[in-house]
Amino acid sequence: MRLVFQRDGIRTTDFVLPKSNIKVITQHWQDFVNNILPYPDNFEGRGIVICAGGKNYFTCCWILINVLRNELDCNLPIEIWYRGNEITPELDEVLMKLNVTCHNVEDFYDISPDMSGYVMKPMAILFSHFKEVLFLDADNICTMNPEFLFDLPEYKEYGAMFWPDFWTTDKNNQIWEIMGVPANSNKEQESGQILINKETCWRELNLALYFNMNNHIYYNYLIGDKDTFRFAWLALKTPFYFIKHEVASCGYIDEDGLFIGHTMAQHTPDGRIIFLHRNLLKWNETDIQYQTWDKIKKFTAESVLKIYIIYRDFKKAKNVMNLEGDLTLLDFKSLFGDLESRCLKYLQSLREEEFYQRL
Image (tube, rainbow, N blue to C red; front, side, top):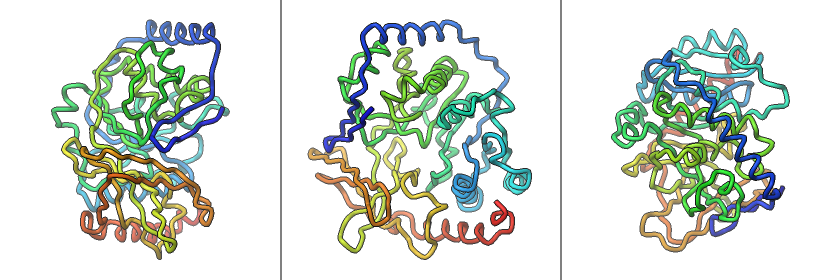
């Protein structure tokens, strides 16, 4: 399978199956939907769910949680979901001091060793104790207390709020035929943040999990777990609220004058940047001596020319996201002050902790 991210923002794949296979695949997910059990009504309250385990993602979630608790005064309960021995009893005890509880997904479901890690996301949302979930990727940072999202009329109306990716699914992608919906040019979903009322969207969430459990099929058409949520809602003809502001790219300009975008900047419905998803430069591989949140490139509602460029920075062996065309260039510190330096202080103090060195 070959994925191509075109400069016009369209994502293509050369994976194609015979029509007979498509019919079988469609029938299988429809049969699954017909057998979904009713909502069990044993969940309660609101909370944040994060998947994090092992040194890399624990490092990321540690900074996220400290920003939520110490910088933003967020009092929502937080659950961290992990697999196997990724979170040690020592880390569990450390996290409890931040009002965080840890759950091993293997206590809830027998996951086969060869199953993709992406399946953890819908499982964590589904099995969490909360009725209403704000899911955050471990490498995501909030710029404001996210508690207000649960009270937004856009969320309350639909029970699901999703955020856009840079890309659009090619209209020739067979996923449209599998789901039985007409192809459109809407943005794909970026699942670094998801807001869901499980009672309202129980069937859709279970179908998203089904797509991830059958990743040997669906990941050929989609990028990991990300768009499995949106397509579950589309397949069941269930409306959802999709943030209308395009995702922006945050990064810095290097010594060669190239823009090194490594963080996805996502918005509230009214256009404020609330999430900084550091998807191409994780905290665990960050040099605390350098700040890399400097500029934000974003398209506006008036933008006509939009060019999306993902390329390889061979000097740092990293993928980079750049935007060109009719865009706005924002200064990070003018918007968020010393947020990055505060994050780096949490990173530095973590690296000095004995429990982290043991990890």
